[in-house]
Image: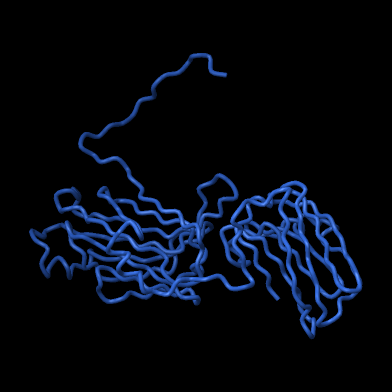
Length: 331
């Protein structure tokens, strides 16, 4: 409870300096391929840029959102750099200046410096309108197009489905994203739209004690690998940089459950002995049904049914199941 001892702290004020502004777009539907983002804006004039070297940045971000920290992965950063020093106009001398450039890079949250840095010419001048379209393919390749010019190709260290937020800093003018821009709508209207495969399902409503997840299928023949059921957050599949709320692995005679975050399997690292439970051997090619329910956000009940057997189990979870955004079955 406050006791009335509130006072205004001193704030450094610089006259005529624009406030720090972030243009942010949340990406609710993760994508393996297709249009990642398109935006339209107006680059500041040379007078508005103030400094001889000016820049603004576009960042495609993977935010795990499990904890309230600023630790995020930068799937791609495009730094638009403008060198105004000694240029009275935006002619060929400006456009060919090596200090006016695009710097594209990636960075894991554990990295001290940006990785995979590539440089390209910046053919955008002060005061010009700009439209940027970024597309992705499933092999971590990205295609960047600026104002309809030649495509720039960049291979990131992250898959495109890791991107769940876009931020632009350094632009004080209005920024229009995707369908809010008529130019972006025109550019993307005929492009292929991403669709989830039949082994991946988006969780439209938060899982709770009334939720039931039902998975039906046939045991592979021969059955010499695991069936993995992944409950994912900010991811479409298991990946060592992302978060797996829970992974349920079904083998021929075992069911194992664990959670993965910050580069570690939690139960495995804690040397818990109840990670796996044994069951009768499953028969190749037979029909199975898996029923998952959640009495609390940190408890899983599972029932695995075959024609010959019913296998039941209860597992304490380490990450709340309410954080699940996608469910993927992998064989």
